Image 1 (cartoon, rainbow, N blue to C red):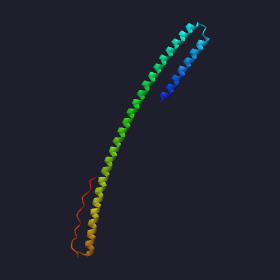
Image 2 (cartoon, rainbow, N blue to C red; image 1 turned 180 degrees about the horizontal axis):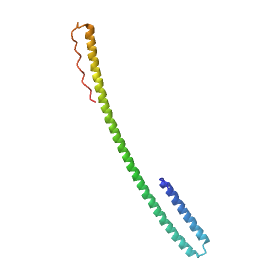
Image 3 (tube, one colour; image 1 turned 90 degrees about the horizontal axis):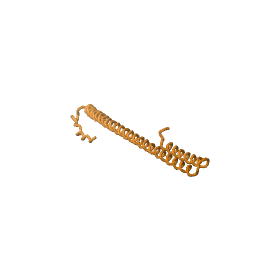
Image 4 (cartoon, one colour; image 1 turned 135 degrees about the horizontal axis):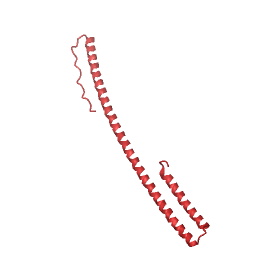
Length: 141
């Protein structure tokens, strides 16, 4: 049997019960015994079939519960793994952001210094030294 045991078990039980009833009816019609003895046998077989069907249904229920629990555990494990990976990616993203921000800030500062040097070079020192504007505060990450 495959893992879709619920539908296959249900179909098996239905076929089992129908087959039992057909067999009982056939036995009743073709039985060479007295009516009372035949009815007793049919009643006993009916009880036997009912008990067996109950046992099979209980086994199917237990198996379904076990499979559902296994699926729940696997789903929880997969969700935890996904959360862990998302946290790792978020940390890595923050790290890359900080690295790039530092590089960009350094490049901007170097560009300002180069522009100031070029300005002084072009003006030939006429205006004296020009100060850079105050550095803006870095926004929180």
